[in-house]
Length: 167
Image (tube, rainbow, N blue to C red; front, top):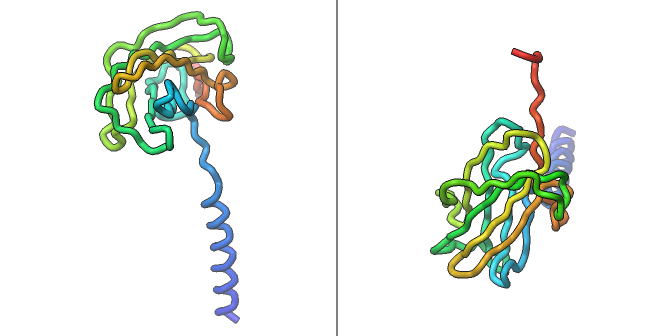
């Protein structure tokens, strides 16, 4: 009897495990395929959710056209953060600022690049990327939330809940 219960439990756990293994993980980034006919670029925030008045990181992942990690030898990109009227791709830009400094290559993923910034208020944000990757010209705009051109994208900046109110 105990042996049958153990086998049944193992069978159930196997089915559940297989079910979870086929679920596509949520990815808080937007991927554009075939950028400049050379790369698949994935853009978003390094970690989400992003809150106003908390440090955040712009995140760029570069893959070749087959979806394999691409380790560029030269990345010369400037990133502008856009504060938008709404989370629509063609929304009016209320403020824009070029991020100072260079994109930093991630130590553990040589096809991933980040740069820190501090969003000062909640709302719709976007990124304008200009420059070159291994000599290929890149000029793209990415927008949070409903402004994504893909099926999924990165989240807009929100206010964090205050507790227990004013300090």
